[in-house]
Image (cartoon, rainbow, N blue to C red):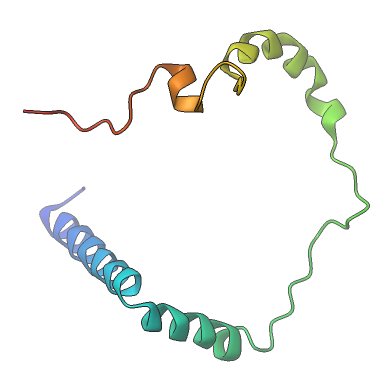
Length: 101
């Protein structure tokens, strides 16, 4: 942070957000009422209009050259369910990654 007061402000904000999320996770009624408030009050008259239609095709031709160059390198990271139980196992990551003292 740029200044000690900025650091204190960011820390206080993070604590408030974390405690709010903790309340929402531990009390399903709070989450239910928050969703209802969002749907019935905050966005009641808001109509989402997407900028692309369902018939628009992705412009995959724009990155074709890049993908041809890097796809062989990416293939070793593709998940192989016939050989591994999980993607983490394929990558050699043991989960959970908590270290013992």
